[in-house]
Image (tube, rainbow, N blue to C red; front, side, top):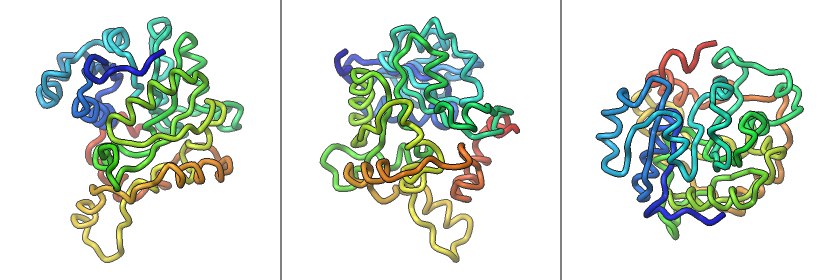
Length: 273
């Protein structure tokens, strides 16, 4: 399996919410073609596609899967079973989902007990695909604002995990093209090291917000890039982590400014409990 060319490669995106839009913007800026989809149909994406430009088009979920050299799951974990598993056979899948117990009325005992990771659960459903965990551990704001070209002193590092080395290489190449260094965090079974409530999840990628700012000032500052993380530091964070207990993320564990912005922009269904 060769690294895909950004001149001819296509990223199929499932989910057109805040995360899916951020991935689409990064991909087209790097020169990739994009087919973006959602559950409501391509006609609902006309405005987004117009914003993204000629490298992007809207499609059905099946069209995004078929077209994608990499297919991103820019969706809630809660809806993973609705994915058409047979359509993913042979596909490289970038799993951006995270387990937040209760979000979307979704909770599983096997995840709560640590019997498997959320990406192992996705891989079990998409049995013929090659699932790689990545671009899941920072929010949509910093996904865009933290991206930097190769060689930039402010370029930061993201982890990936997966069971197929060739698929990890393909995904890593894409992540490098859109603005990040990459470190390998191991297999899907080891991907708990980069899940919510671990040292490399979310907080390292956001700027510090000092006390005493107004809400408007804090939101403006928060939407700037965070401090960069070197590959060496990322490796130390991953290797030094212990499995969280309880397992899974919470809104209370996120920066309050992020939650406020999220609630302003996300649909009500996203935070339904």
